[in-house]
Image (cartoon, rainbow, N blue to C red; front, side, top):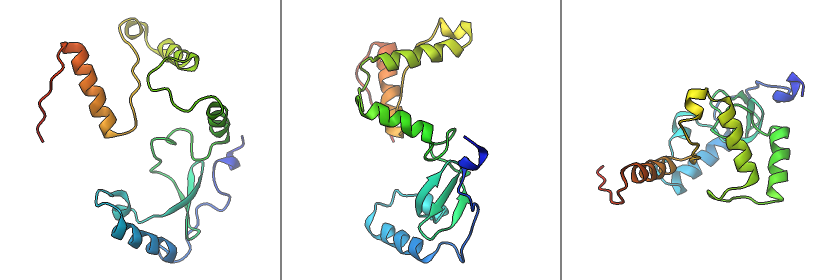
Length: 157
């Protein structure tokens, strides 16, 4: 890939006042019909239409350099063709295996272990978590059960 492949050609580009009319209509609709836990659009009133590596285009045609980048694209960019090809190849085989072992999973774990310093490599194990806070809490509970050999929890908020 060439550098030009990592962004929309006309990036960055702002058309008029932000947010634009289409974005404002969708943000208003979101406020009326979606739960109040939504937080990012309140600080960044943006309605994304598409992304190309390090840039995003909103529904009004504005193009921004994506300094925010969600967890799924942080290092690789939006719509990276190499990642899309790998995903399509995997989707033809299976989409989710929880924590059942697969050859691909074991290969990934071995590669991660190879790059770790030796003093860590021989004393640790790999555990895959998920992308949400609830996954982090679940992982912490599983780890606590494993380490303490206890299976009951009391939680406070």
